[in-house]
Length: 509
Image 1 (cartoon, rainbow, N blue to C red):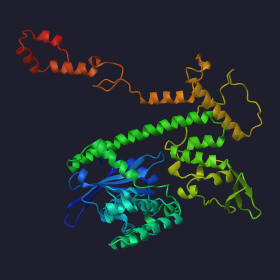
Image 2 (image 1 turned 90 degrees about the vertical axis):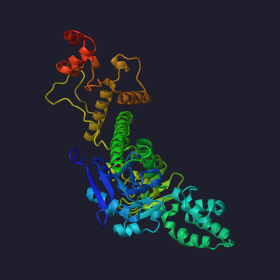
Image 3 (image 1 turned 60 degrees about the vertical axis):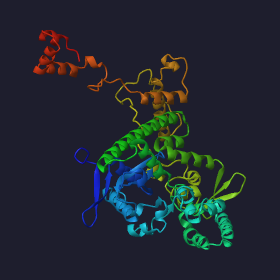
Image 4 (image 1 turned 180 degrees about the vertical axis):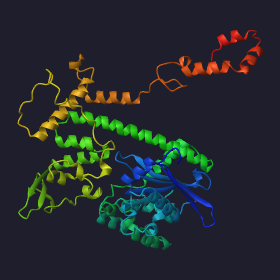
């Protein structure tokens, strides 16, 4: 792999006696994804029960700009331990120097991270937070709380414990906590009350929703679903995984190529749809957002725009900016000369987007205010060819007239008009092209999807379109080569054909 792909990198872990304890590998796509989206990591291991004996697959998953699962690496380790997780994370950091360890904001995992020792071993206890997966806490099959309380007692506490996890506020959390305490007060076994105080209430910062929502950059995390989705992908694509590590590595790499192909298809389709929407839109801010943001980022922009339409902006005497609803109720105040907001949306993205208040304050969409995570993976939109200055203007290009717009607005309008003309020139159903009617946006999008999903008929021998197998030049070359061998003549004689020339003339592959 290293010889055929210069971007491929790997690490092999060994114990003190030289025994191999793990493999970690990273492709160029994984490295770039880690550099872009590696601030929130979803970490988990696929256990031995459904995996190769002795080689659990270590999964570190992320969410890209399209809200799709992507990976910074894949690894096989000897068992699931904190030291194994630390080794894998240090390996991917060494293979991707553009992403620093201090840039990691959240590690989301199951109960093995409850002690938070992984932060100390990585040296990021002051810059990173551990969050526990809700499913691994409350599930009757794999949850740690049902195992600690027992199924009978947990059935009585489940409603209050679930509210403690998904609490919208500190008040709701305290009410649920008091409900659990009252139910455990008269229980004969006081170890459950001690477990509540020691392992649940004292570690509420690891799972309580009202605390997590106050942390900058939490991305509205609800659990370790991306890592579990990657596990499901491994089982669906690779199978039962009862194989040697080398064969497992090969299968996982083939799966990675398939996932990359699917992501590229989604990104390209998203880009085509955005270009069509940008042509139809009349709002300059929305056009720039369509061309510059990924699907996840554009959803955040749309929500912010809808909320900003309900707000009014007023500048106070001291220079601060006050935002209030149309009915007059005050909502938020931003200090003068600052781009920092305290609203939940801005906190959720870690200050890497524009919330509704900043959109009003800054006069619309500003690409520089959005982090690379939220931008489109294709970068700039396709360039539009323009006639040269020396080329004379024909009847289709009348002399320019003064329309009262600024040069920047005029350029934007001409660019949008040129792009619109290009799209319409490809539309066979448009009246200007002899068609009956102009197709709707949905029809054009469906056509784009059909075109992207078409596969040209290829010759299975040379993998080139335009001819059948019997017409392939490689078949003719193979026929000429085989005829020259003696074993062909011997084979013909064995069939009872007396004339070799007849066999040569009638040989058909």
